[in-house]
Amino acid sequence: PCMKKLNDENECLELDPPRAPPDFDFMKANENLAEFSSSLLSLLLENEQHIHQQAREICAYVQLKLQQRFGDVIPPIYGAMLLCDRVFIPAVAYPKLFHLLPELPQFHARRSFVLSS
Image (cartoon, rainbow, N blue to C red; front, side):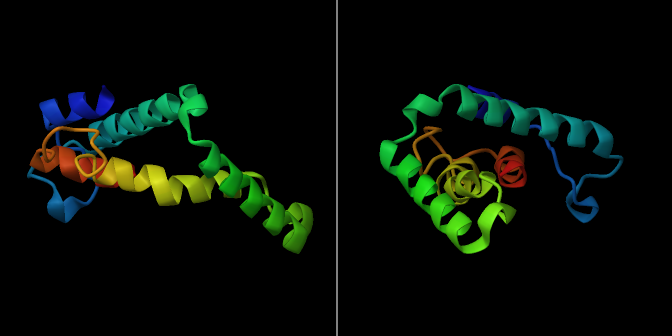
């Protein structure tokens, strides 16, 4: 729902000054991008049970191997980061490819998806 809303509104959430329109409100864009990213993360955490068991097993295996090699220096977050890097970030950056949107995102929405990922 949050991806569709962002695509429908096609609001510019640019953070790079050369890419932004003149008189752009970077503070508002930063706040809106943080809000969008937080809503994506909340949605992901609320639906953890829908993450495939194989993906969870891969994360657990990576975490185990990292702990065996580096001990307690490696926090458990690395398994989750692997899952995000390989599955969720590409889905956010390319929502049509992963069937999260029926069509290609609009111009500003597409850039916002990339920035949030």
